[in-house]
Length: 92
Image 1 (cartoon, one colour):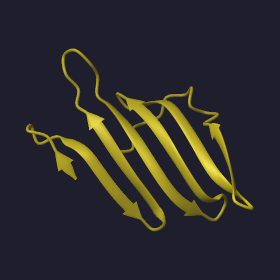
Image 2: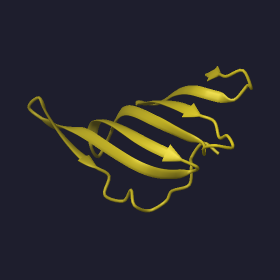
Image 3: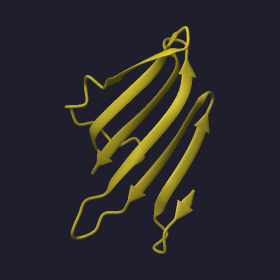
């Protein structure tokens, strides 16, 4: 974890099982809301290897793109189909 001069988390990395992620944030200020980008990679029983990027602001997911291995050296990618709905920020 890397914090700024105000002791706010700015860069957070975590590994749980086969899932790794890094979150890079800018803190909220009078002129702008809190925002961050989340980059993740991992494997799972349903998709196998997968990677992705999420953009967040004030606890709402704004955009997400995912890619997963489909075999024979090929990957498939797509934006998240449910991103239009707000989600609760998993870090707060």
